[in-house]
Amino acid sequence: MRGLIDKIKKIVVYDADNEFYAKVFPDSVTKKDLLRIRTMTHADLPSVLSIERKNYEFPWEEDIFTDCFKAGYDCLVCEYDQSVLGYCLLSMAVGEAHILNISVAPNEQGQGIGRRMLEHLIELATGKAETIFLEVRPSNVGAIALYEKMGFNEIGVRKGYYPATNGREDAIMLALELFE
Image (cartoon, rainbow, N blue to C red; front, side, top):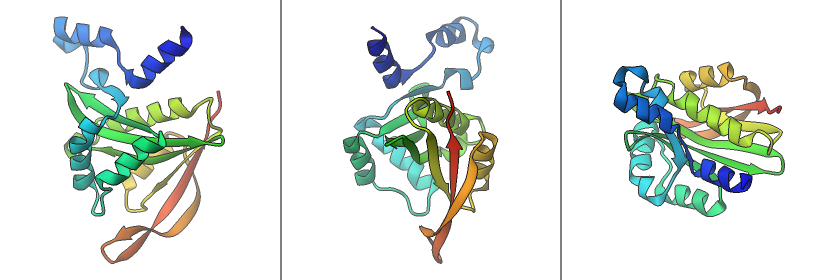
């Protein structure tokens, strides 16, 4: 029975009590309380690609997301009122987890959505991986600040990792040791 519940939780993370209170007592919960994190589907790709293209000068294309589905990665969206506000992707293998992408719609940034998704990814990896890794552009100071607040530490630099307008941009490599 526990396995079935875990499978259901993997599909959607949601608190029905919050939705009830939001309907009965509208001022009792915040938008952040009503965010849903659920498994990404192919039907989400238009919204996901729209966010991707708004946030990145060199965005991932649909085939990369499709490959992530095929590989069995944890591909998730964060939604509010049936609108996708952000998405994240995580791969896990051999005791390591790697955050491949985490992105929030530009008009929704700064509201804790990225943090909520990051916390969810860390929770998914805890107990299955010893360390969670990610790369981030040095120019993405907001993301770096969030990662540092969440306990990630710089472990290196990948030279010329990201495409950039004037050539390539390095990636800062970050890691978080996971403890139960």
